[in-house]
Image (cartoon, rainbow, N blue to C red; front, side):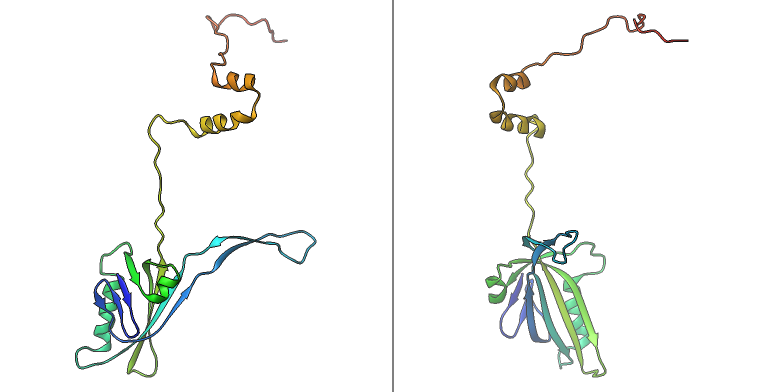
Length: 188
């Protein structure tokens, strides 16, 4: 779970150390452009939306309880523990992301930056909206896609032809002896 209020950011019950500076939520539209020969204008077609990206900026300072490096270790362990192979899905709770319809995220990127001013470590956490894909399985023995499309398009066909497609259409004639001489001859 990621929880945010005016002063704190919480991920899975751990309040992120440091000073919360900003949060940015970006959700671009997906647009296809087509090349048209002889035209300088590219026609555009809207095809949906990209997943949202959430960027959170923090500043880490030394404090009596922990150094800025120790605070960075806490954030690093939330991002990726040694040996972790896949990023985890987190719940995000924030008025800002709630308005933007984002409730599940993956911790996508962690950037830490140290400048000439050694008193501060600037940290950017990047989250990517996670929308689980639902996959429906078919029962074994159900109609195949081709059979389903034939039966659905059968409404547009002549009744006799539709009946012909659904019934046994016969088979090729059987030849008992496949080594019998053919009536065709080869010229020598």
